[in-house]
Image (cartoon, rainbow over all chains, first blue to last red):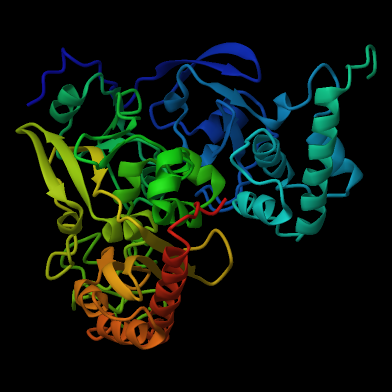
Length: 181
Length: 336
């Protein structure tokens, strides 16, 4: 038998203490060992922006960023996020200003029903920061293939991502305007 | 989802002693949590290994590249040494799953991923792999996606990995750490054929952990190519795939490595096909003969006979492309 005194074990009914940074704010909460990140976000923290689609990593509606990388929150235990930075769609806008990806999704009409949109935008904003992914349309489509859109808004989603890329490059070079909402 | 106990491994040595036969290690969790939700896997305890120092990629003195068990599929695919010296591995990794899943999934976890056979994933179905002795609903069921190579009466489930097909072609060694210490297993010997015991999927003993996978030295100068054929252009498992690697000696083939995915019950290396390539002219007739040899033992089920010509064509095309790249001096990068 194993020596339980050496390693801290969690009995079935116990909860675990979890420390993470959520949308830029440090957070400590108690979670069950089998609590899935997606469910903790939606049910325990009331952050309904992250959507539950297939719940098996096949549709991408639940995509969040963990330490800047897009991940399926439905296939990640909350306790595995100890010490990590988790960003949901609620954390994408900064200082009351929409993220360029959010703005371009609006301007390009990159959704119909909107259910997949938070996941699409979390994948899109991650890929735009990832210099390992090509900037051409084919590379973007390939990198976005883990986000299914049942309405079929793919054409406008691609357009929105490429428009946001231009805006991000512009923001990076232009001095930031003060006091613009 | 069923509940389970949870602990974090604080060292490789402890991890091996920390598990019980009903416990499971968790790294990326993409297979495990999916299957726990489906009630296909029922671990009493998860031992989280993510904090272990198994995230390095480094050359060994003998010219082999060692990959830590916890290197993510994304990081491995984009690793400069992999892209330069093992482009077929980079291509295979990027052909698999989605960006999100590759960001989570690890090298060892990819090796340990389970079949996508729908009857394995459905606890109400008969499946000898999931529940020994229960039968196989796939054999006479909707078996379009099942195996044509390596199947048995007990099981015809396909091994789903792309990464493993590239590793089978490259040649690799797994380092395992367990209660009895460390040992090494050739990649080819790690996954088992189903035979009468499809529930025994691999060579890991209770408590053993994969700590590293070491690739054989790269073939040089050589061309290599991973060709994956599937029902949609991205984010889909292979119907048939080929990892091909060959070196040229003038117009003749020097060394050759061929492995198949999507058609076999394990990552399917084709030594007889390779032998038929070596020393032969690098031309269509040679490739066609090698492909015929590779699929000589293929046995179709009711709905998947199409996989045999599909796999044959994938071998021929991958060998043609690898030859073209070898003629260019082997200069290529993994697909972006």
